[in-house]
Amino acid sequence: MAEGVGGRAALAGALFRIGALRFGRFTLASGKSSPYYLDLRVLPSDPEAYGLAIAAYKAVVGGIGEANFDAVAGVATAGVTLSSPLAYVLKKPMLYVRSEEKGHGLGRRVEGAVRPGWRTIVVDDLITTGGSILSAVEALRSAGCVVKEALVLVDRLEGGKARLATEGVRLNAFVDVKELAGTLFDGKMITKAAFQAVQKQMEEGLNNL
Image (cartoon, rainbow, N blue to C red; front, side, top):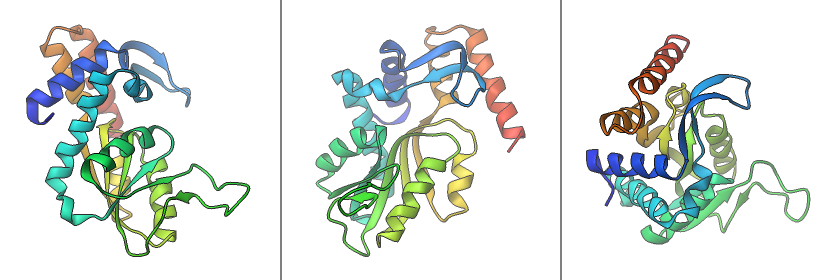
């Protein structure tokens, strides 16, 4: 099982190896400049990395307690590729939340056999500001679910955790981007300059919250 320092080291190495985590200078969709680029959508394309990710989610669930929730809900689209195997391993019902309502059929955002009162944990690949997860939480609550927990593989440390907390949702992350960069630096996989650039961005981000 991927847990603790060893689990983070294995996951960090796998993400770096498959190009899911890159360092340099990147322009994000928002126009913001970043010293790293994180794309977890490639995870399912590498069975080893995918397995480490699912084991990491399961390790975090161990801290939450499987008895404390009834269903798993993935956030489309990246979250669904991770919530599906997790729900299967945990033997829990799975739902998923569309980014927007369908324009046909029942026109709903939450897919699956929803049962009112289900204690549901929301699963996504990562969190930045928390907007997409909170949108999913709102949809699930409107469908009758009780949502108090969110689970991600990586926290980008850009205010998402605090934003979720204001809506009564606790963030559970296996690792954050600063820990990933630190692990890769300690393993001599990235330069000191690359690590320091990530540290600087995290510090600037926290000062702007």
